[in-house]
Image 1 (spheres, helix red, strand yellow):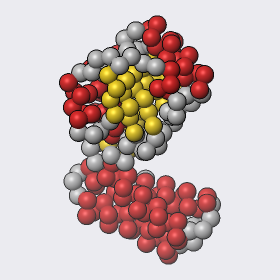
Image 2 (image 1 turned 180 degrees about the horizontal axis):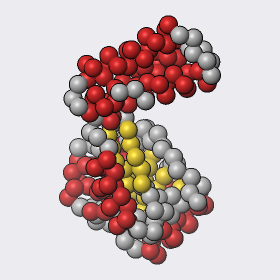
Image 3 (image 1 turned 90 degrees about the vertical axis):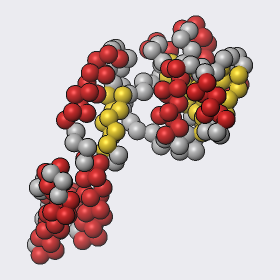
Image 4 (image 1 turned 135 degrees about the vertical axis):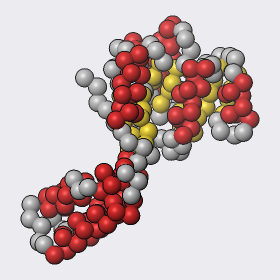
Length: 216
């Protein structure tokens, strides 16, 4: 059983070993999260060279060295070489650094999930390395279910949550109030393209809270 979590990588040091097409896919996610990325590879693709040229990452075109792992929060091995991945993992273990070896579960400390991204709403999917193909199918299914407006909806209920925190002192009562907002018709109205009515619906729930003492 794995422990799922979302990491804050902004400003944190991450190493990627390898600079081919597989590495590019991982780099986009890492850079998008704000990580400070260093790439080490004997040969870098044009895409990775372009990223380095514009200052998005630091690139060393040379073989991996053990000291490359020092000071990293995470390491991603995208080498397509299980023996190389195993060596990188041994270096990581010696320094207490977590490693993901792409498509090489035996050399992974963690798996990078597929993500359905709707702004403030993100859904991560993993089969613990068992079947990347199944992950892709599940992502497609979830993408069809999650309406494109769900991220904006999360922003609206976050704003309501801040107001509820100011109005309702007790934790359990706040939780009930937040659930009342989420279970209102606001989400449906937003999906129908009527944000004004969605906001009015949320406002009506908050107005009821002002006029009614909320009990746990």
